[in-house]
Length: 479
View 1: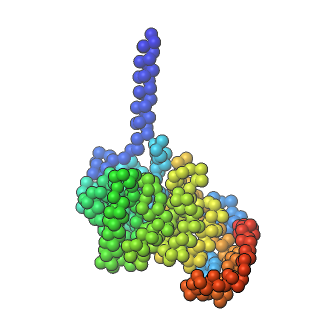
View 2: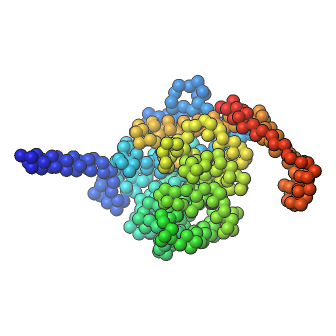
View 3: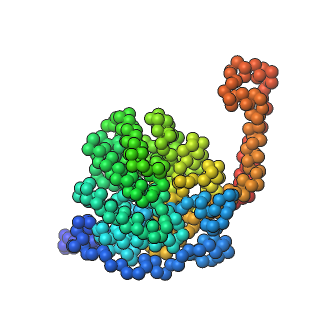
């Protein structure tokens, strides 16, 4: 009896697992299998029929589908608000994000999706993309090559797929008067890139990555893209025991040199950007943070050819604040673009959440103002809906709150600058260097013997308070 009961229970459990697998498996099929999977053509009408164009209604508005702080045409601190930000929608998170995580199946099945990975479906998503950014009132969009067009069986087939979707994108963005902020190649998802792309131990993979970047740069140029990004998610190592780190770094530098040469060959005038990240998916990524990336560029003589795309969530993963990474990039003349997102302080991975922290947004905008803006870069929303957010309107709400948060940050930062109390506190802290001897030190004209002599004249130096609490009080008063 017990054995019978046990077998029955085992059969029941197996049935449950099978049912879960069937339900959880996303309905996808390769681009080459359209006939079996169904035709993706024929979407009629709007993709977001119940969403009107998002407008600025002011801080008192209770309408979730309106801007409370972001007023694109409002001039603030010498520029229109839209020109300070140059907001961009990330195609991959917005139109390819499914809500799946390592522990669960996709939760998002948008009405326009048909379960295929066909060219027709790719074109449908592209049309949805332009309706979305037009209604949101954003001027730019960003993409990975393999997110907008399906991978083919060969490089030629992949390129042909990409060309077909890009031709539609060019038509749609011309009509909508939108632009590409930046494009990039997806060099991390396909199994061929498991050891990296530019840093792969396999020459054939290095060559394939070069061919893929060549094509991605060309279509970015064709679409009028203003930047091109390199994110080396697998350019690093899992263990040094089986890694020749020096050789891999040299290979990565040669790869970037070839990218610079191709950029000039095709007449692409956009900025090349490196996006630092410390780890995930590799244990150690070679462009760990802004300082590491700056050092890499200097070592290989590439500092005049690249700038940095700073992602806030990557900053916190590397043990820094976003403000720290922006300031490090800025003072090195390398701040080119910002991937606007944030992570959860209780979670140790890249959660890519929309930025909603007013204090962090204010610090970010202080750096942007000091940098004179970001153009030809901007703010790209490399952020995704939470797994549990599954309504179409959530796509709009998430971007609205992200844009409003940064707009409040801009207003606060301008308030701080115009008030002048914080900058005066900083000036006073270093005023001892605003002297003849201080100028000699900063010009590199004061040697140790001279300074020793001055110390003997002056005696023990007086050390003033740093006034950190007062600085924090002034900062908080602007929020």
